[in-house]
Amino acid sequence: MQIKRIHLSNFRNFKEKSFVFSNKTSVIVGPNASGKTNVLESLFLLSTGKSFRAKVEEEVIFYEEEIARAEGAVIEKEKGEKFGTNLEVILTRGEITIGMNPRKVEKVARKRLLINGVGKRLIDFAGKFRVTLFGPWDLGLVTEFPGKRRDFLDMVLSQTDREYRRTSLSYVKGLRQRNRLLLKIKEEGVSRSQLLFWDKLLIKNGDYISGKRAEFIEFANSQEGLNNQKFSLEYDKSAISEARLEQYKYEEVAATATLVGPHRDDFIFRLEEKESKKAMDIARYGSRGEQRMVVLWLKLAELSFIKEKIGELPTLLLDDIFSELDHEHRKIVMEVTKKQQTIITTADPHFVEGLDRMERIVLSA
Ligand SMILES: Nc1ncnc2c1ncn2[C@@H]1O[C@H](COP(=O)(O)OP(=O)(O)OP(=O)(O)O)[C@@H](O)[C@H]1O
Ligand SMILES: [Mg+2]
Image (cartoon, rainbow, N blue to C red):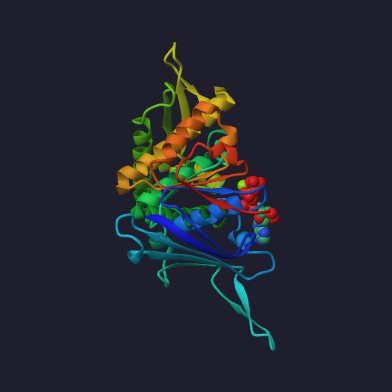
């Protein structure tokens, strides 16, 4: 699927605005704060049903307004526009005002997801239109806490696997229930036997999740390095099983938290040293440049993984990354942009001068 056009209403700094994208490369050029990242945020939202940067999704609603809307027309490459699909995300603050006199406030859903006008659950909405998003904040994948890396794995696997979407949701709900029960065991002396049901559910879903995560990590490790540098990932898996739960049974009641399972997973970025052949931990010992490179390598692995699973490359969204890359790596990215639909933002158009057949979208401050 490719994105043909979008229309945004009360979305971030856009009151009403449409964008049309090339099936090759589109470059969004504009000064700081003109809304470049906001456009990519809306595309990511149409793809995954989630914002990649709003902590609370109502943040995307134009100040003082009640409803934000992002609509996008996606088409299959071969079939063309006639068989397009309309994706739509509507966000509210939980209520809307109806009428002027008298004014009536009505409770409404905070988020609605629609395909061709029909409401969908998140697991059925996400994954229709696939994207790989790459921006300066992705450096945090290496430098920040494990939650970031788990979110990354979830984002990739959710795009390619409906069962993964379903299973993760069920796992998170089960985990919440189980932790609540641990609290009751600690404070109200409820019997431990009640845990059994949740244990089974978490073990079943947890196995599926870690199996798929391992599959992605293995896939990434089978990919080529960058500029003769050999990168790899090491899965730091928190296995969940009856035995492991048994092992932590006192600690987890004390902590009132489930202490093993994929919600505790992590992975380590490694770079093979040329002489010793030892795989160095990039988060600890890598230079800033090496950290950037491994993130680029991971993003390229993400592209290939989606291609392998879906049979088609996702749309690549690049947010202002050129200023952070050196000349060599800029060239690598430029080569990659030619292979699939790509949407690039930049404040400085001279970075993308080398691109032929690009369409330019200009935003003003
Ligand atoms: N809910 C909102 N309502 C109205 N405006 C908003 C809202 N959220 C963010 N903005 C505005 O959007 C602008 C930022 O947009 P964005 O981050 O997309 O800019 P940018 O072009 O990517 O800038 P930079 O080059 O600095 O990255 C800011 O001026 C901000 O005030
Ligand atoms: Mg930006």
